[in-house]
Length: 432
Ligand code: PMP
Image (cartoon, rainbow, N blue to C red; front, side):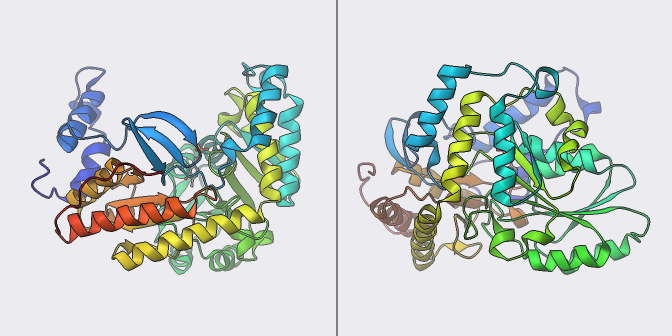
């Protein structure tokens, strides 16, 4: 595969992601060699977008990458709270008082009061009866889905759902049925076709999809759930903190919170730390932790993380100023990308996915943006919808107008030189 020739898009991702058949392998490390050679064929010595090293992180929106000051437009840092002074002070205080880690699972060695308080505060934030905190959002999906569902059940999932949702479903042993992205009528049809009576049915969607940036039409899924007596679970990983008046996510924004049975979320995006959670009104929900192996058999979150998460969630609860800045920044970049000619995959929002005109140009645009001081995500199949190559931008409330305007200029230069083939402008020294 060379960059002078457009590779088959459908093979780019599968080359990197497909697991070889174990029967064809000899050494225990053969799977690694297979992926290594696929990566080097794919990149041929060019900068690897998937293993990029950040030399120095300076703020929620600035870093030094490959020796150059770089503006960050691809880090899910929607509210910039990882640098918030109150959150940092809370983490520092907990670090001094309670140490760097808990060294054990909560089941084996007990919960710190911070873990219990964090769960209480999440439940209160979402106005739910209880919440369970996991060590990551990935583990929340694994634990909740595999804890609730089992063989004999049917789980309907949106085709574009996150890997952790897929893995949780696989772990459960339930039958997995994928429906077309954001298509509740397709989910309805498939449930009917499955001849569901006698089976328990779960429907799992995300609130805000992380590649295209589009929202789930939750009222439509609520209707399907009600029709079939299903359990509806919404992963609000990218919408917690960013959507809804109160920052509770897309279910809040679309007015259907009470119809969603379980909300899943992460602390790794708006909250600015690490961890995951699930919250529900079911009276026994808190005991789900006893069925969730990703909760039972892993160490609990370190005290500084718990303290920062609690401070951050308090800020999110009073964060309409942050959400307003985030959305105004998103609209500014979104409108400009459209004017330049970029093919945007959804409406304006904290995530803006733009479809690239092929793999070669897509990589060139990504790399030129990086050279000129703008970091975005380069995404390829199977992580992208419809086999497309996507540049994914994520906005932050902390982006300044000047940073966004500078990024727009660089996006425009990339479009003119790489897509329209105009003469390249001299390389400008990097951005703010
Ligand atoms: N769900 C979704 C929709 C996600 O996008 C992600 C992370 N990208 C996760 C779950 C996992 O979250 P975490 O980073 O906390 O493991």
